[in-house]
Image 1 (cartoon, rainbow, N blue to C red):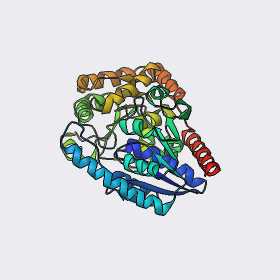
Image 2: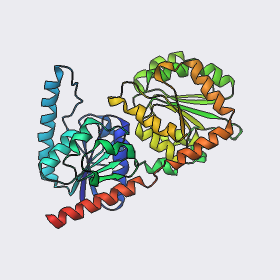
Image 3: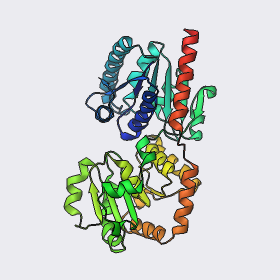
Image 4: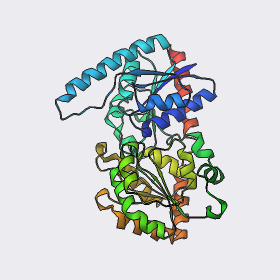
Length: 367
């Protein structure tokens, strides 16, 4: 049995794809990852040991004349994807969103291959809404997203698949990874992360809040993004309880160590936080497509698993105030932790894999 997995552009689309691919590989399914050439998904797929085929793919600037060239670029990607799929002859193509998904899934649908989509967000992206018209199944992280899709009978609320390393990580492993001595292992730890590309707003607020947080005995792990790393490093105070990373491959250790996280409300991060019961302060990215990060954050706030701070309201003072208020209220943190656990779908990958097998069986029956 062979499956093609595609999706990329950001870690939020790639990590669910890798989690699905890993679950299939454990069952003996042969996996090919397809995505944009010279991309983050190519690097991460290689790190995970999956063969990769690149196609032309890019995002669309719909209100710019550039869109004509971008559509042509993606069309070339679709034609290349068709050539690859004719050779590979997969039993199923699985897409997890992002601009790298569209040429591959569109090519698969043109060849009448079964396709399964996974939508991470509470408000779905345009690519998935369009591709869902011909997809045999659409798996949802948030049930609220179902209203935006055709064919309700093809929708499945599965949650978002999380990498096994996230689920199995322990604080003991994290202490060893960060080389934290036993005398410091009880210190309250704050994780600040802007996702795989970093977030300038979060970095600025963190820089302003750090002196106050460190003085209050908080350990801060700041993942600032590669493009911001030089500027952030120049302005950070030197402190043994301040750990700076441009990017962290071993994210499971930072999540396992954290008592609280400040982050954007990307669906992939939220799924990981839910699975480990991590309380969060969410700062939705205001320019995300269709403002989908706000919808994601509101779903967690409604269940009291998170607090939300508007991007324009975030600064050093508001960040430090919110963190220290929660630090001094362990009962509230415990309630948030339990609420986060209640939103977890730790078996999301297994649910999606079972749907994938059902589609393959149906295809073979009618083929």
